[in-house]
Length: 90
Image (cartoon, rainbow, N blue to C red; front, side, top):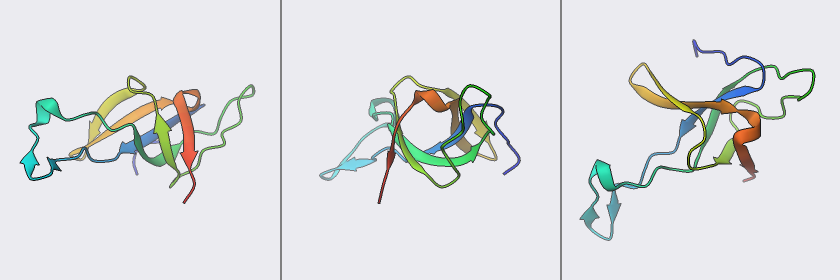
């Protein structure tokens, strides 16, 4: 990955939105924004806040959290660690 978040920020690859429900294809404009994804890169943290997230963590985040960016044709979110609500343990 060419992108390295700074301080207490993480780069998240959102899970793909559901495309089909019971045989009905949902157009892009009606799809719900996914609220979970995978951490693909993390900063080192700050003096005040230790970085506890790591690459590969599955996380839940708020609906309006983060800033969207596109890199190599994929859409990512970059947000502060504090915007992540939970880690999904599998």
